[in-house]
Length: 126
Image 1 (cartoon, rainbow, N blue to C red):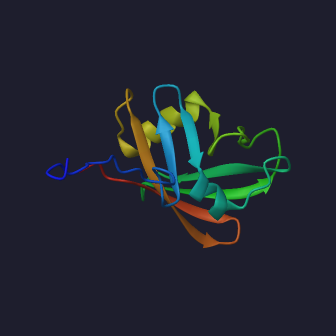
Image 2: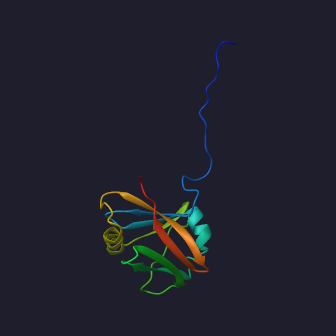
């Protein structure tokens, strides 16, 4: 047996997404906010919601955290390593703004601008 070398499978701990990342699944419009993103947002899902502001000219998206209202987006999913919401209309709007394929998943980086205000930028697949 001394001539044999054991090759063991390496296990990586942690999440797939180490940086603050938001996933957008199309065509359903499922927005997934992964654990590092939730840590950056520091949102109280019971009392706060998200509002999206889009600039078609600059092709940019800004997110602001607000008190929960009927017209903002509410995150769900407390037992998973991510939180999410689904809105097909917002997904189509993102697809139009960033010229995204409607049958795949896309990822965005999140950058903190100031307390409660964040910018989203598309992660290029190339």
